[in-house]
Length: 335
Image: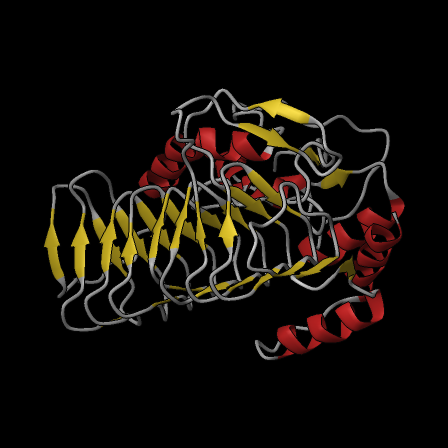
């Protein structure tokens, strides 16, 4: 068996996507980087490298891998992803690869299908009348126990993870990936959902990356293109401005962020972990971690209240907030 190691790095420049997971746990196509490299190497890594003790405990709890010291990460052929917009840049390439190398699901599809690319639907998935699967520009994969409600349109390349629900009349456009246990509706394109997130109502979300346990209120819409059609500049959580060298950039949403109905998210906005936004004004760019923003007040979401809500939300999916991740959340709140 091959011995190899993987490193948690670029966590600051990938924030907030990397706040509550190793950078190699980020879903960068149909798979996470860790899943893809494990597939590529033929076995799981023998351990991981991380400079932060508290963060390392969280990663071990999430992945089951052991932290090692004094080893070097294995050099393999894989795009280097250092920023949230790098995730968008490599999404088409990595999604196409993941779809090509995915284990076949092997079921016949009885939905209305078109296009020459492969459509793979798990036998336990439910596709309601009126569903259209358009594989004219890329393959489509729908995993176990997914539910595609009536009149939804799914355009490849697209990866719908296990236990996801696509709501009635949704339009899921090319280069969209839904990790497991997501509920998604409205118009979504060029976007990755890490998993366990809700955007079940109307509203546009494009060229974005969404963390876990995010809830996007009805009618919430983001912009992914400047009126000038120019290069999008993103302000990170520290306020530093970055030229993305991309024309299409939506938003990057940290875990446990929540949005009220009809929120408006402008081009290139970063929203920090744990933020709660309920304002008729545009969502601040960036929005700090644990920001509590309404029309009346902007304050800090108190960590004990936040943790109570987070545990309630996760409990609805029969998931517990482990002690190691709670420790990382407390560190982020106190930073």
